[in-house]
Structure formats: structure tokens, C-alpha cells
Image 1 (cartoon, rainbow, N blue to C red):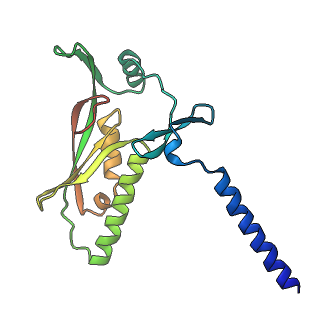
Image 2 (image 1 turned 90 degrees about the vertical axis):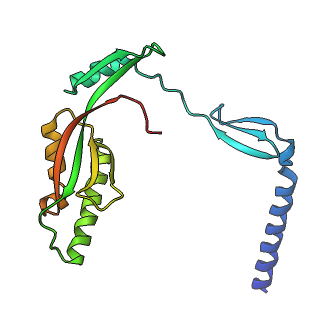
Image 3 (image 1 turned 135 degrees about the vertical axis):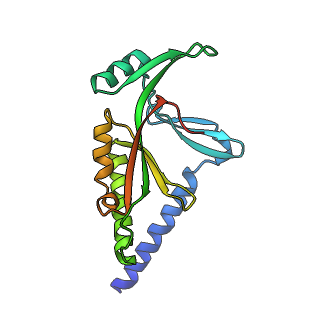
Amino acid sequence: MKKALLIIGMALCILSCKEEAKATVEPMSDVIKETVDDDKNSIRKDGESTVLIEEKPIQKEKSVKQLKEELTAKGFQTFDYIDEKTQDTILMQQYFIAFLKRGMIRNQNEEEANRLQNEHLAHLGKMYELGYADISGPFGDDGNIRGITIYNVPTQKMADSLANSDPMVQAGRLEIEIHPWWAAKGFSLR
């Protein structure tokens, strides 16, 4: 008897929830714009579908002068110039490219080489997470230069130290060759 009452109670609860849900749902095609959560999120009609848009606060960008002062205070080498076409001030920063070259010690067995590769990738990931490296990747051929890492640090000595702490370099499987490299601050690859 208790089981039967429990089953009937659950069924009534489920049915009432379904009916309540049907009564409160508006057709999506009727929703044109609704502000939710104090204008931080909104719903708008986009064609026949409804899209939830999350608005993010706009952060004021730093001026070239402010960015240059911050980088200089941290020890980075910079210079700026005026782009003749756009009349924009372009800030250049010195980075360091580490060429990862085939090392002299490549006699590791497959298990050891795989372990070193995993540690190498973890090292590069850590460099990226800490903000020391901006981009890394292997070359697509099987040449002597295996890949590059671009270090975003103030000195070549620091870039050299970070690059040489790579487990693949320490094992002799890779060697490092570092060169200073200039790039416009804030520009992205295309």
C-alpha cells in the first residue's frame, strides 16, 4: 500500500511539473529582446533562433606610452615609430627566438624518447602559462632545426636559461640557438 501511494504521489508530481512548464514557456519566435541579469546577458532573436549573448565589460586599453613605460620598467627593450600610412604609433618589443636543433645525443630508446617528449611538451606548456613564451611549435620537415619557441622575457640570458632547462635539451636530444627578434606589440598572426 505504501509503495502504491508513493508511486501515485511521484506520478502526480511529475505531471504537475510538466503542466507548469508548459504554461510558463513562451514560444521562442515571440522573444525579440529581453534583458537579463542587469544588462550583463540578453536574449535576442537572430533569424529564427534565439541566441543568449553575454556582454563583457569593456577594458580600457593602455596607451602606447603607458605600455612602453611598463615594459621598460620590467627591463624589456622597446622602440616606437609612426606608421606613415595609418599615422598610428607602433610599439616594437624585443623578443628572443630559440631554435631547437637536433642534438648530438639521440640514442635514447623509444620509451625514454617518449618520456622526454612528454616532459618537453610539459615544459613548453609551463613556459606559456607563466608568460615566458608566446608561441612554440615544430617545423614540418625532418631537418636539423626541429622547432622554435619565442620567449617574451627581458634578456637573452633569461631566454637562454629557460630554453636550456627543457628536459630534451638537458638530455642532449635538442640543442638551443637563440637570437633577438623584434615584433610589433599587440599584433597577432594571420
